[in-house]
Image (cartoon, rainbow, N blue to C red; front, side):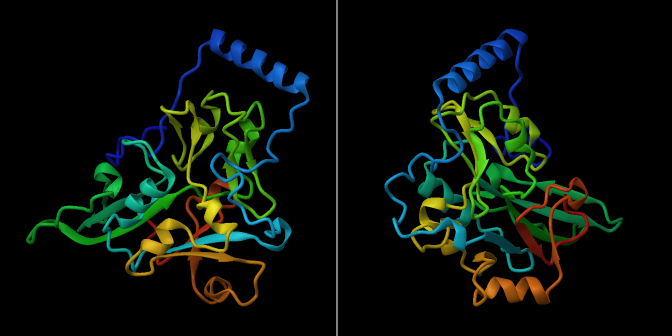
Length: 265
């Protein structure tokens, strides 16, 4: 799904399928099933061999928190994500949207180049009454539609709550891209497979924070472990007003927001 409204060309790209292409994919699925391959139980590309051998999936449940009141729209997170995960130009695993509210309460949203290089200053004396930034990324939903529509099980959820793509089995059909209501998936033109934010799973499983969390100069992004009672994120979620994007979709996002304006979708 291409986010033209926000000027973010690569935040999520749809992919149309012809009947012939669909039948071709079904043939591929049949071949995979016939081979007895186990799908959705391996680590993402680039993570194999990098995961700490002592990491226990059953003792963690990762969640993410963004404080929109703190974000300054500098784009450091998007740049760090691109460098860390080798994201192709024109695509984004995370991006920043700017909301500008006029006197009538109408919202104008923009995201030039995914906010990767920041935003132009708002001119004084204009009609803007309020402005704020909203970082976005994969919500790693507990009831995610992307894993449900994948015909080969290449989109899956790990035992610690992270939604990943097995690029060894992904056939690039684009069903998951179309199914994601948040526009967080795209087809990687270099690998021809579905791509998205992984919460830097290769870092999490080695006891490190995500690249975007590490780089944020104002601490607007937090990654935390719900299974760890001493993790600060648990107190924040318990004591502050926390929101998720489009809760009416019942996808149970595990990416939370504090200070989120009701105009944000």
